[in-house]
Length: 179
Image (cartoon, rainbow, N blue to C red):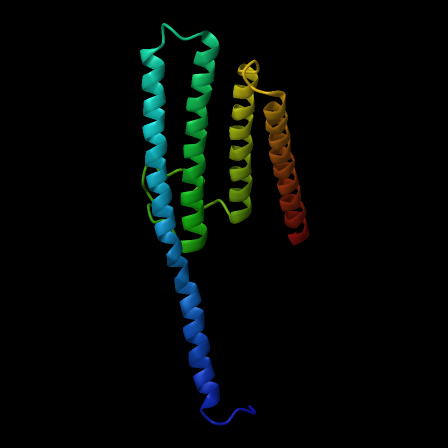
């Protein structure tokens, strides 16, 4: 038997239900953020086209090292775009709503099968790759990069690598503990 006066238990249940529904529905507040990331993808495309155009126009006048650095910049932009897509698809799928394009011939295999833990690992792998490209660009321009900046680049990259390894290790330990 409940200690609450008649009617209070019913009101508490309605209030609790209202709070829970409000919290659950608040996930839709993330949807505009994912749309904003889609716009950011457009910005990356603009920068990619701009960089490509500049490289083509100056193809016969720039050094091979500058060409390599330019290509690394394009790869960097591509990886950043991939990172944005992973965040948009994975975040929306995991936190907002199921993406409904079953049967679409171009649907990436990983959508709908990647949990939050796997998404974190994919994101960290992308961040490490982006960091490695930035580090490689610095090494390609080692004459123009100060030792201080180069040291920071190496330190940041090593930090990202160690973070990714530790994250993968934690996920493996959690996965092992669940079985």
